[in-house]
Length: 114
Image (cartoon, rainbow, N blue to C red):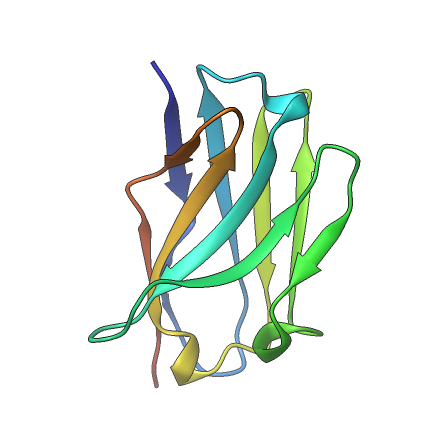
């Protein structure tokens, strides 16, 4: 059974930082493309970043320069380091794994507010 468990969300002030983690099980992590998506209230889920098994990274323009994605294959974990956070970054952040099929985590809430 595939499980993606996100952690690290919370409330942060504008300009602050958070690091999200996603621990994966039930997949061959090292050969999976891992990604992060987010869904703000009243909006559709949107792509944020992904990292391929070989380390190729794609990041959406709206967070480029502020967010980075990385992976630790030894720990079956993917990270999203977020800095210079803005109120518009407020959303539920979802981990995504692309293997022979697509899998999603339950999401972790990130709220950017003073």
